[in-house]
Image 1 (spheres, rainbow, N blue to C red):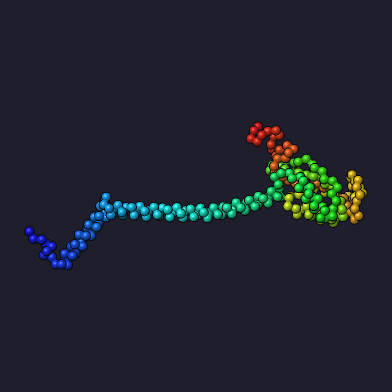
Image 2 (image 1 turned 180 degrees about the vertical axis):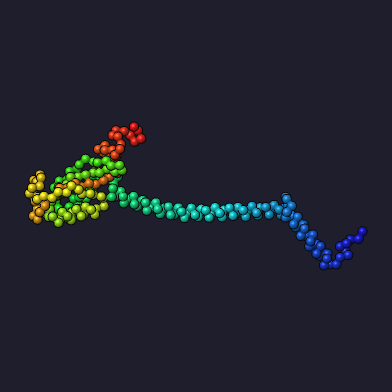
Length: 214
């Protein structure tokens, strides 16, 4: 039987051989279960996995940037909280309040004659701690004293202010320094946030009842 390949030219034989090789290669690539097909599937799976990981990394980078922003915000809020604790402390800190008052008076050349603690006043979110104060000195020194109180780190509000001559001031039993022209009585009010030791409860709460209980 005649072999048709032998009747072909060398070029035709080469083309036929190349076509057969291509067909075998294609069959190897797309035939299920073949080694080449398995390699192709593994490569496709690896590419998909890489794309998935790339997307996850991109998302995590967004969260990382967001975390840095949130951390900066938390740091800023922490600083604000520390500042607020200085302005309105959690505890009464009555000794510190008296020290601030005496320091402002000394810097202004004013004498504090009486500093009497009044009843603590509960509010919704804080407590008011008023003091009745009597001080004397030169008029402008007293004005400077009040100005210094307004510049202190802790909030101190002054009210019920009344001026009188040192000689007629109520309860005067002390020598008056030269240059003293006026005696003032006023209420100095400061604040704190934690429940007072005296048992004062925030506004709206019933004395002797635990929070959340009737």
